[in-house]
Image 1 (spheres, helix red, strand yellow):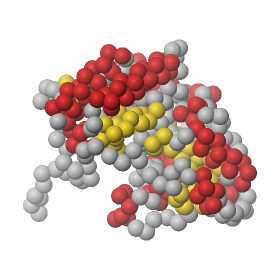
Image 2: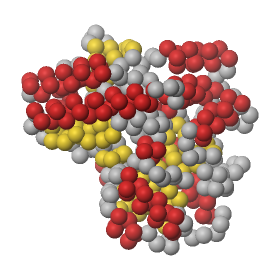
Image 3: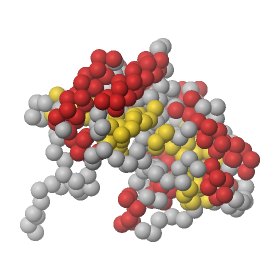
Image 4: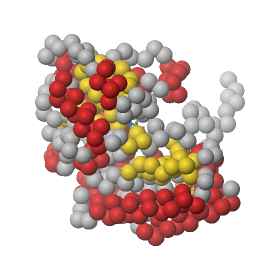
Length: 390
Ligand code: PLP
C-alpha cells in the first residue's frame, strides 16, 4: 500500500508553523533562530519557566532512582506530596491524574459515587455557559459547547447548563435531582471571564442549603496563577472537590483531583485507577513545584508583578482603540480586541511575543509566574510596537 502522507499526526490543531526548539526562563527559541518572550506558557502550564534548574535537578535525581512502579505499591514520597497538596488547600484526599480532563473525570465520579452509595436520587450536575472542562466525553457533556462536541454525539446525560454569573437562573435550576455545581473560578478558554467572589459565596450557600457538592475547576486558574496557590483562596468559600493540572508540574504532564474526606468517602478500592497518575517522576517534579511556589515571597511577587502588568495593559487600552477591554486576574489576563483576536495574537508573535487566543475575541496573557517588572516592560513595548504597526 502506498501512503500519501505529509504528516503522521492527526491534524486536530490545524497547520502549525512555528517550531520551538529550546526554552530558558521566560524565553523560547525557534528553529529559525528567533527569540520569543513567552506570555502563553504552553496554555498556562510552565509556571516556573522553561528548563528551571530546580526542576531539572529534581527530575534528574529521580530519573536515576526510579521511573515507574504502580499505584498498587505504597510510595512514601507520593504520600508526602499528597499531604503537601492537602495542607495547602481545603482537601483531605488526593487522586493523581495525568491531565486536567482526567482530574475533572475523577471529580465527576466522586460526585456520582457520593449519592449512589447513599441511595439518593441526585444525579444532575449544573455547569455554566462558556465553561471549558476538557475533551473527554464527560467533560464535553459538562461544558455543552458545540464547538468542541458537534461531531461526537451522543453525549452523556446528567448535565444542566445555566448562564454565567446569573444567580436567578442558577436558583431556578436547582431541584431534588441536583447533585453538584461545577465551575471554573476564572473561565480560561471561555475568554478569561472571572467569576465574582460574591457569586462563589452564593453558590456555596446554595450548596449548603440543598446538600449539594461544590466542584471547582482550577485546572487553569490554580497553582499560583492568581497570586494565591488556588484562586478560590481569594474568597471565603471552600469547595468539596477540585480539579487541578497545568501549572502543577510546570510542563511535566500531571494533574490531581482533590476532595474532602466526606465527598470522597466512597472512592474505595477498585472504584477508580490510573496506570501513570502520581508516578515517581511526576511526584518528584510536583513536589519541587509546590515547594517553590510556597517558598517565602514567591506568591507575593506574583501578585505584585500581575498588578503591574494589569496597570500597564490598562494604560495601553487608553491609547489604543484596538484594546476593547482588559480582564482576568493575577497572571491569567485577557485583552479583548476589536479585530480578530487570532490575527492580533499572530501580530504579537511576529514582533516576538507569544500569547494564546481564547473565546470571546480575547488574546490571553498567561506568562510564567517567574516574570519580573523588566519582562512586563518588554512585553508592553512589543504590544505597543505591534499595535502601532497595525
Ligand atoms: N479545565 C480547564 C479549566 C482547562 O482550562 C482545561 C484545559 O485547557 C482543562 C480542564 C482540560 O485540561 P487538559 O487539557 O490538561 O486535559
